[in-house]
Structure formats: C-alpha cells, structure tokens
Length: 139
Image (tube, rainbow, N blue to C red; front, top):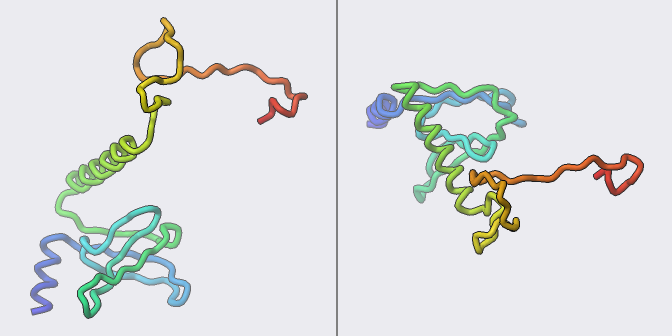
C-alpha cells in the first residue's frame, strides 16, 4: 500500500531533489514529493516525516547551503504563473500592511497643495549639493 500511495503521489505532484551541505553529513541529496518542499524567507523547507501525533517534522535549510533544487512539473508555464501569483499576493499583503507612498492615516501626504503634482503617486525629493568640508553634509 505504501508503494502504491507513493507512486500515486509521484504522478499527481511530481518529485523534487534538493542537494545541500549539512554540517554533520556533508553533501546531502534528498528526493521528496513536490508538495513536501517550499522556499520561504531565504530557506528551503523540506518535510522529513510525520511524528507519532501526526505532526510534520521539517528541516529548514538556508538558501546559501543549497547547491540546487530540481523539480518535475507537468507544465512549466503553470509553475511560473503560480510563482508570479505568490509574489504578487505577498506584495499586495505588504502594501496593505505598510503605509507606502508617504501618506499619513488621514490621507494627507504631508505636502502642501502644489500645482505641479502629477497625481501619479510619485514623491518629489529636493536634492541640493552639500559642502564636503561640513561634517553634517556628509551623511
């Protein structure tokens, strides 16, 4: 039964191979179902197994220790679209959480009403040359 389930999983989601450096084991090559590996916050996360309570045991591997990750996918374009959608979703989430564009909570961007505002959300920054002999201007 286990081999049959593994075979079905192979056909459904594909497989991934990750090759990385482990401090104790040296170069390690692991082959797992695609759904058991993910990239998040500069780390590859690999599901190793489940414990007796059914909790997933995972390993976080810093991206700097990974040589490569190989995956089998049914359609490369679909995989790229999924990654693009994930990135756009994260960017939208960050945009919702951070006050971007220099606006305060009242919707005022802190500038007095100017006639030269292009209205495209851009912010004008005045830049002046500083005196290199003045230590306060070298920041």
